[in-house]
Amino acid sequence: MQIETPPLISIVLDKRRVKTNGKFPVKLRVYFSATKKQKLYNLNLEYSEKDFNSIWNTSKTRVEYKEDKIRLNSIEEKAIRISRELSPFDFDQFEKRLFRSSQDGSNISYHYDQIIKEKIELSNLSTADVYKNSRQALRDYCKEELNKDFDSFRFQDITSDWLNKYEQYMTNRKKRSINTVSIYLRALKTVYNKAIDEKDIEKDYLPFGKRKYQIPSSTNVKRALSEDQLAKLLNCSPLNYQQEKARDFWFFSFACNGMNVKDIAQLRFKDIEGDRIVFYRSKTLNTSKANLKPISVYLNDFALSVIEKYGSTNKSPEKLVFDILEEGLNAHQQRTKIKVFTRFINQHIKKLAMANGLTENISTYWARHSFATRAIRKGASMEFMQESLGHKNLKTTQNYFAGFDNETRKEFAQSLMDFRNEK
Image 1 (cartoon, rainbow, N blue to C red):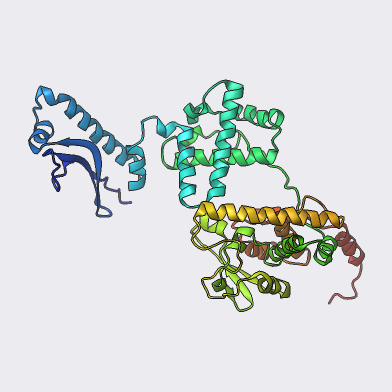
Image 2 (spheres, rainbow, N blue to C red):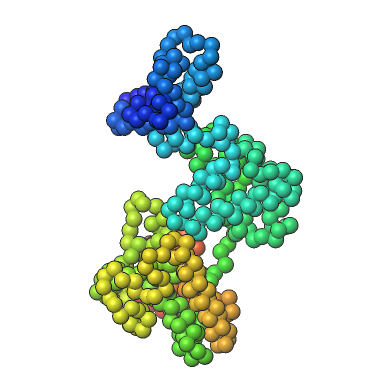
């Protein structure tokens, strides 16, 4: 196995451009031979060529330059130490470590900040909010229960016992669901794993896992309508245009493999290939670039009728199919528009459902679960559903299935002893 040669680190005077005061900026030069890449980092110091040579390029530094020499030595030594800790060497990680304070690497809140920043840069705003909420819940716990500032907490300060007490605080005092606690603590675990991957902390600091703290998991509440309920909702008479539109888009989601509202809003006519839609889930694009697989949805008559009814008359390939969004919106503006439209659907589908004796808790989320459950009850395999829903993990797909209803169980029991139709 070939050992990677560490980068060459040096302090240099950048003489490419002299300043008006006759001085030049001092730079940290990093050259990595494996990639033949060089970077110069500004140290916010400047000297004349004569002064720099008197400070740095001499074995006997004069007394008045001793402090400057110590400062430059400290910077160079820190850069060399960081470069050798990184294996393989990575300029991005090097820069993060070089320009942060010495305490940041072991600081939990610092790593939360880094993840939140990364998610926002990727326009993955919903995931960024999960990390913000996770950190805020930890801050509240530290302030209310421990009278401490969470932002000063280090990774080694949190233990299994600490997490058990936090869980009790969240469920007993704050009345948060187990599912919420699980989401927040999975975010914290990701923060730990990020710090471990970046070699800021040792793996032994991780308080999660076997014989340590176990993140609670709850049985998902099944959000699927039965066949009779779906038929009733589809065929009922809306009281107004808003209810009709909400129902149409709810069932469009249902008919299109449980497509979420964001993906519906971002559909373009180029995604429609004959009698099907081929698209990548926005959620997948934001979380994984490896092994991306498009979802193929065959358009039934109902889905086609919704496109015809609400779609743009301009069907050029780059045109958005529906007018939920406008062109040129940034990520924050898009998110606001999608949330408003989702709220519109949920508000009016609830009213329509209640007026027809159905559950008042129905939302766009139910369309996805209802699609998965109905497809599996009609014989679709879990593997087929995993592909249809765009899940990387089969376990995620299994969580969408609401189980078999009593009528299905009854039909199975009645047919159990019927061998006549078997070959």
